[in-house]
Image (cartoon, rainbow, N blue to C red; front, top):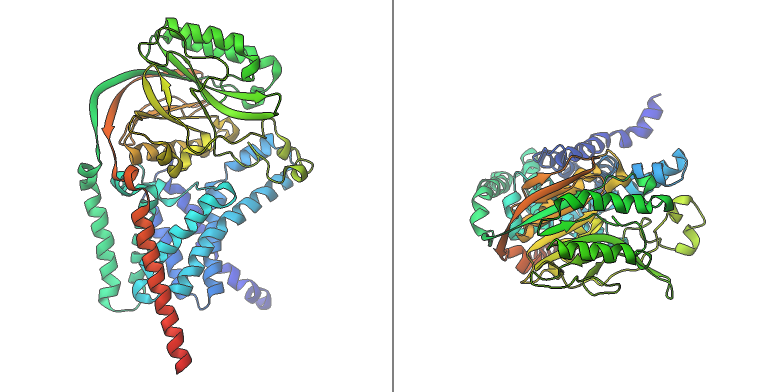
Length: 519
């Protein structure tokens, strides 16, 4: 028995980190225990400090990541299990692969910290390594930047930093602060032990005072908006016999409230392919024109000749306030094609191989073409909207690249019916709130089953619709003007700081090895 326990003792030591990673999920919506990462990440830093080898540090980061993503993105399993067509063992195995892959990034941060750090620099080095690993997670295999730690501060804590340094910068400050706390458990000079804690404390103290530096202000202009939530069950969305009932449902929900400046329908709200829905779209275009408004709706386009499909947003009705005719015709330029496609759901990597393996790799509408990275803003009834479809709202660099001096509103549409009554839609809304905070613009979010909401430029929710309800959400949105420092400079300062810290630390390590070689 002792032999067995001794064999598994290294793994048992990782249980606290596994638990700490899992509990970190409570920092995000819908729980919002924003202070929790200070403690959970501090525990990871302490494990890295006590590691006797780079392998131990790597294992500590990996264990933390298994708990963090195993609980935090558990909502992905809802779509795999319910719509993927896999047996339970297969769906769990696929989730294990996803979680294991994501856990590699905190493992990399822990490994690099062990290799590069000197005790006096550990909080800065750990924060820099963490940001580097998180950047890699946001770009590798098209990127999956979900659950970045800064989102835990969307409504509390460090949220006033968002217009200045963005969510990525908040993640740096949060991780730095957690690492500073970890120094209290390490025997070293008092200056190194308490100095970092003092700096971290000051960052939290000054956070509420940063509102004056946000860079934007409300204007005297406002508009009335209508967001329509159809609540169409996922299993019915692409059933051919449900096409017209669904299209009529959205029209019936909208018609009594047409007298608004702007109407928003969710992602792929019109389930018929755009070339086949021309008669419906022409009627909708005229109806919006006569009501003196514009409708933005999600729809799928398909080119029979090239066999290409796009996940689009189109504008119907009035393009400008003084337009005398409806803007829409098939192929018109006032549209947006989704750029950031979701792996498996919207494109299948290694398609010729994977589609043969399991039903999940052959889901309906899972082979889209990618829209351009930079596209013109949508113009609807004279208002300029920067669009993002579903997953794209998690990529601030793409939002920044499409931001113009004319942009008045951020717009995101989604269909989170894939994820049922899980924490996924709540996290998705929280991500959208952070984008409003970073760029200082009101944000409209229309979804099929929820969570549909209007978000103010300061990230607070103005109005929200009940989830899993067939409803319309009406609100008056006050517009804003000005440019946040983050919209202007992005993550430039963060990369300069992190690069300088890592190069300096690497230089110290190299110098130390040279001295040891000479000795």
